[in-house]
Structures are given as C-alpha cells and as structure tokens.
Amino acid sequence: MELTDDERAMLAGEEGPAVQAAMDLLVRYGEALGADRFVDTDNVAGVPGMVNQFLQEYYADGGAASHDEIFSRHDLDADETFEVPKAKAKTSRLQGFVEPERWEEHGTDPEDARLDRETEAFEANHDVEILKTCTPYHAGNLPSYGEHCAWMESSAVVFVNSVVGARTNVEGRESTSAAMLTGKIPDWGLHREENRYGTHRIEVDTDEAVDSVMDWGMLGYFVGERVQEHKPVVVGNYGSPDRIEHKHFGAAAATSGGIELYHVVGETPEAETEEDAFGPNEPEDVLVYDEETREEVYHELNEVGDDRDVDFVMLGCPHYSIDQVREVSRLLEGEQLHEDVALWLFSSRAVREQAAEEGHVEVIESSGAEMMTDTCSAMSQSVPPGTDVVAMDSAKQTHYLPAFLGVEAWFGTTEDVIDAAVTGTWDGELR
Ligand code: F3S
Image (cartoon, rainbow, N blue to C red; front, side, top):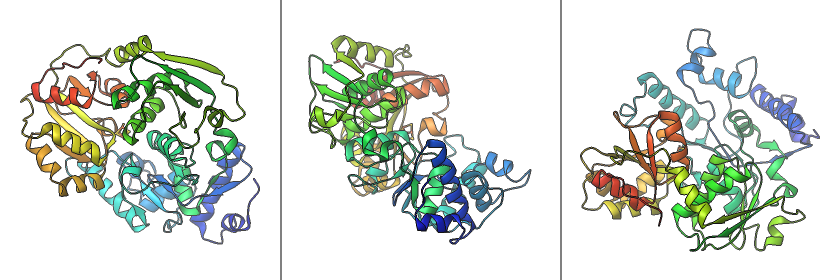
C-alpha cells in the first residue's frame, strides 16, 4: 500500500506501540483486500476492547486478562500487551450482549454483567461515546453525505450508506478498533465511487404502493434473498419511505442477504434518477416484486408460526427511534398486557431517556411492558422463561429468533403485535 507521511510515522512507532500495532494490522488488512491506500476517518462505530469471560480466560491462560491485554492481543492481533491510548478518531460504542439494569431477567451470568460494566468504563476512559445501540444514527451519530466511516453492524452500515450517502463497508471488531487509534481505514469497497453503482434492478409491481414499515421490511427481505451481496436499485410502485421504513428495508436486506448499499430511485441521495443509480453499469438481472411475491414473502416470514397463543412480543429491531416509541406509547395507553404475555421493547439509552422525559416509559411500563437498552433478544439470546411463541414487527428479528432459540414466530405490523400482547392471540394478516 502507498502510505502517506503520517501513516508511515504511525507504522514506525512514532505515536507509540499500540498505534504502531494498529497501523500494522490495517496495512495487512488493506493488502489482503487489494487496497492501494487508506482514507481518513473520524467516525468509527465498533466494540473496542469488549471483554467477556471467554476472552478473559483465553488471553490470560487461566487467569484474568486486563482490558489492555485483550485490546492488544485480540483487537490488534499483537503478540505483546500495550497501554491503549485514547481514541484518535471519534468512536461510538455499538450494542452488546448485556442489558444494564435487567440482565438477570435475560439470564446473564453475573460475571459477564460485571465485565460489561468494566468494559464500558474502559471505553469511556478512552473517549469512546457509550451509545450502546445498533442505531447510532438515532442516538446522535448521524454521518454526513460522503463521510468516510468505519462501522460494524450490518443494519447500521446499510442505513448510512444508502439513506445518508456516507461511505463504509461492514467492518469487524479488529479493523474498527485499529481505525479508532489511527483514524484510517483501507480505501476499498464502498469507500470508492466506482463500487457504489447499482447492479440489479428491482421492479416493484404490487397492487398498492409499498408504503408501510411492514411492506418495506418484506420488500427488503425479498431483495436480500435474491440479490445477496450486490447493489439493488429499486424502481416502481412505492411511496416516499421515511427513516423507519428505510431502516426496516435495509436491516431485512442485510439479513436475508448481505446488502450493504441500495438505491431507491427518487428517494436515496445517490439515485435521483435510475441513470444516476446504475452509473456505467448495465443491470445484471431484473427482479419483479409483485402481489404474488409479496404474499410469498409474508408466508415465508410466518412459516414458523403455528400456535396463535403468543407468549412474548419483541419490539425494537433495529433499536426503536423516539417516533416509534411514541407510537407504541399511544397504542398501549390505558391497556394492560395479557397475563400470559411479556413485551420487551429495545432502544438506545438516549432514546429511552428522551422517552422517559416525555412520559412514554411510564405509559409503556404501566401496561406491563418493559423498555430495555444496549442489547436485544437475538444478541443476548434470551426471551422470558417459558416462551414458545413470539410476535414481532421486524423481518430481521423474525429471521433470527426461531433459528437461535427454537421458538415459533409471527411477523406483522406494530399494531398486530401490540394487539397480540394485549389479547394473547395472534390475529395478524397480510393487508
Ligand atoms: Fe439491533 Fe439486535 Fe436487531 S442488535 S439490528 S435489535 S438483531
């Protein structure tokens, strides 16, 4: 790779051994990718130095490894342990596995809960913003158009690439931790203009325009499954998607497939026209999403639903925005959950705090539901004890939970799943 003077200086150890190891890791990574150079980044989202019992034991040969030890040896792939300096690039902490207040309800081992608090203190001491969410863009970190970022978390990556026009690949823990210390990431993949053009044309030809969170989620699920890791360009019969509809479309497309960037013609910033979206590319394939396909996707998402007696409702995948919390608060006002149903709603800490100030936490929790942060059922791999049947408004979570936890799942609108929480019975249908 061609290095600039500051990159060469970091690699030579002029900013200390940890930055040197970070630069060394990034050079090896860039070379493996075939990148020629780095771009500067001042927006990193990762899990720097995150510790659990396994890592602690693994790196300490039976003792307890320090955070510096795990950061050096695991995050930076170094053979020695360094004192880790503060972040050079602005860095946000993504979601984890532990609910900070209700970890016992999630069945989290007390030692893992303690290590999570310790990790958070380590990160805060290194100037990492503790957002603890998969939606940093709802919690104060919204990149700008064209900004080079280094983000983990597939649903956040596809959102900022597609909806905002920022530039990031789906990075890993190691590359984000190295980027945090250096402010560099290989100039490869979606950082480069030529890789951002569309490859597949998706024609939406449904009877009614795709114009709801559920419909955008289903369309995203279809697109991911069919397009896999390419770049879809959506044209046809849809309304103007808002941030929440985009969030559900992208999260679903990054779950059934590996979509990191999509274009919706007339809606996303790099797709004012179809010509802009495809640039020099000819579509490799044209896929039609019509009424029949829509029904197939709905049935596919609901195929592991059989028993209509719902035990658990999970909301907040990806983590809810304040507008979504307000909607749930409106739907639950004056209601009580069915005695056999639990409802967990996940958001970032920032959104929960705002919701508390606006009185929504009280309304929601008075119904028997709980508002949680930092994690979700898929990440913590937990649902309330005795859960057999779950209802969700997220195609992504509906894809994951049955596979992770062997539960039955129903997918529908937010209204459908709240109705199931109150009545105890699934009554959703494709409308
Ligand atoms: Fe977020 Fe968990 Fe969904 S981390 S995107 S709520 S699977």
